[in-house]
Length: 115
Image 1 (tube, rainbow, N blue to C red):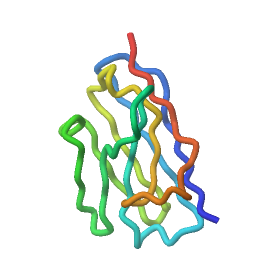
Image 2: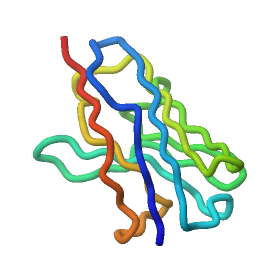
Image 3: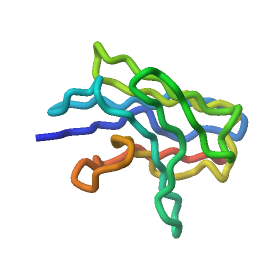
Image 4: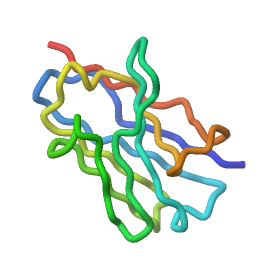
């Protein structure tokens, strides 16, 4: 059974930073590209960043230069370092394989950017 468990969210002021983690189990983590996705209130879920098996990365234009995705295959964990956070980054953040599998969604972690 695949489990993806996100953590690290919270309340942060504009301009602040957070580091999200996602631990995977039930899959051979190293053979999958991984992605971080987010869903803001009233909006559809969107891809924020993805990382390939070789470590290549891609980012949504809205987060480019501010967010960094990384992975540790030994820990079956993918990370999202978020800097210079903006109120529009407020959302529930999820990880999943890329492309996503609807059977793999976890509970996500809430990030709130507000003063």
